[in-house]
Structure formats: C-alpha cells, structure tokens
Length: 201
Image 1: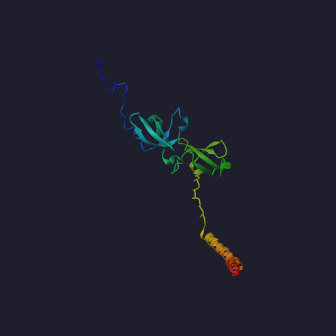
Image 2: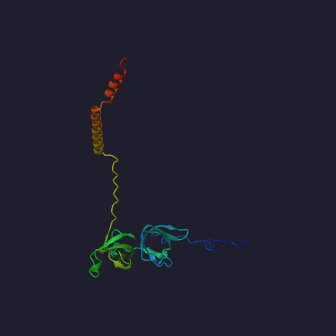
Image 3: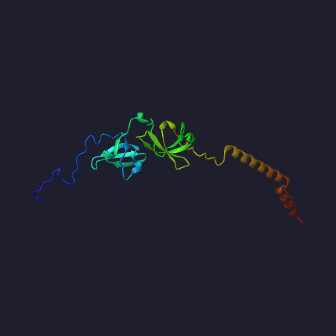
C-alpha cells in the first residue's frame, strides 16, 4: 500500500484539464442538443457565460434560467444569415403574427415564443387562445411590447380651489350668524331686565 504511487493519470478522482477547445464557446451564442433529461431545451438558443473546469461543463443562460451542460450538448449557434433575427426573441415573449399566405387565418393573431429551432430557422410559437404550435420565420413575427405602467395619479386631499370654496362658505355662515344675532341682541335685553329689577323701593 505504502509503495504504490498515484499519478494524475492513474488517480481515480483525477480529471483531465480542460482544453482550449472545451472553453472556446464562452461568451458565444450556442444551440442546445442531445439532452435526454431536459428534451424541451433541445434546439433552444442560449449564451455560454462560463466554463467550469472542475466538472467540465458550460454554464448556459437560456432566458432567465442557467443550466450546466457538457460540451457535447452545445454547439455554436449559426450566424444571423440562417434566419435568426438581429434581436433574438426570448422564450415567453409575446408576438403578433403577420404576412402569412399559407395560413392567412393566423395573421393578426397573438402568440407566445416557445423556442428557436436553429435547424429550421424558425421560432416555435404557441398561438394565443389555442394549443396549436406553429413554426414561423422571424419576418412573420412582431414582438408585442408590454404596455408601460403609468404612475397612479394620487389626488390631493383638498385642492386650492376646494379650500377657497370652503373658506367662502365659512364666511357666509359667519355673516349669517352675525345678522341673526343682530336681530335678537341677547346682551341688550339682559341689560334692560337687570336694570329694571334693581330699581329702589
């Protein structure tokens, strides 16, 4: 046991260092293929953000998800000339269909992007309001941007105009009370009655 030596090649836990070829796709757009456990990711386009030399896998970002994939399951995405639009539509993006001749009934329909099929140069699109999925060229799709959320208008508790109306109303009420008090001068009557009662006998 003590005489046995382990080298990097004979060690059961040793890994071959990653080659430059393995890391060549870092920062590139890649196409996923050959996955058995996640077949829904096959043919989708993502970005290889890094390469982990410890486990020999790329970190690939597809939409908002990041997954670790072997080099054999990714390949460089084709150039834009293959039909991919200048601005790639992300999965779950909302689109409007237009310009179809074979399926003219789908024109003006909405849809949701499922994935990009690099081998066909088309997007997989689920038609809005149905379970139908169609493959469409980028030129037949227009992204529908979500409406901008406007800030809610919060009205003032009392506007300047409302304050002026309230102030004028209060003045009118005070003037009315003063006029009513002038008709029945409580203080004068009380003084007269008090003077009469104090007359000498």
